[in-house]
Image (cartoon, rainbow, N blue to C red; front, side, top):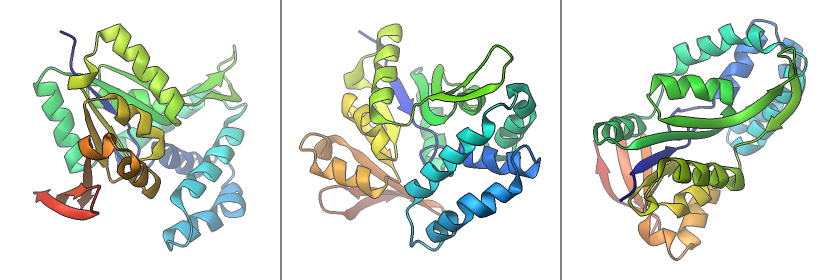
Length: 246
């Protein structure tokens, strides 16, 4: 019999925001990135999302593109202090439901894996904080002098998350039918499909509709919505609340 595992996305699933966004803002604060970049390239898209006219994914993709370009040539060691600050300040700003589930999985002796599209040097710190068995994040490639090259090995899409999950399954002899996965966006869809206990936490519209339109997943998936101090369980077939947990 294989090991039971829990596969967690981080941004929007455990952490209530994006680690990359918080790191980007800190890089601006410490003038590693020119503050003008925010006002000239990002602010308009951010404001549209804040007013709920725009889409969060558009904002995140635009910011990720600028973030990658601005890090090119920066020495990784120069960002270490800022990365530590991001986790120290934001590491506890997680969803109550996700925090409770991580604690439960640890108590049960399950393997815990963090698979996130955020930079690996931030994901590693979150994995350490919450005692994950192993992690994968987007790799920001550095050269022989430890400077960022502007190249990445991404981990925010469904295909790469599935490949990573396959790797962990083989390495740790994971029983997928008894295992759990937690995600919030379309990039987590394949991960949710592969396990016997799929759980979408505050899913975006694309993921919600993908679950609802999948004959198998719509029957098995739990959809969790956390607002303020109440956690709701949503029925994907009827779009109505079927229960709640305090």
